Figure 1 (cartoon, rainbow, N blue to C red):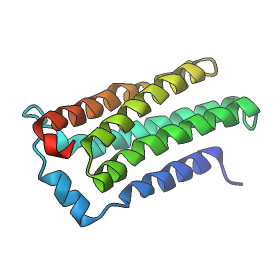
Figure 2 (figure 1 turned 90 degrees about the vertical axis):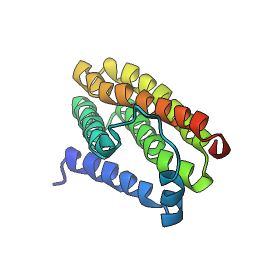
Figure 3 (figure 1 turned 60 degrees about the vertical axis):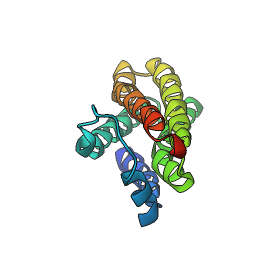
Length: 157
């Protein structure tokens, strides 16, 4: 029998793979952009996002296990999926459009949806809601960084 954590992890992994639909030209465009001087942790960003995604999947698992298969639980799973889609859409949309503004909008939208999800999950499990906090802490940093990059690269806004 397939366990719920396997399904949740599998869906999260498949959605995350979608963020790889970028071309070498897209990456070249992004690499040439100026960054804020304080952005010294760029190499750690993939590790940070990996931890954030693991926490999100773990949160979804807790919620599913509390009330598996109920309408409320399915609706919460849709919110988890929406948050992951918004999160992984950041890179391909921003890079494909070559628009830092698009990245900032997606980042801000994801943060708002993350708050909604954390509040909705709180009634099911405090731990599940707490596991969304890493997203709520990291997402604004990424969004703010992208916004600051607009100021440094106005032609690429």
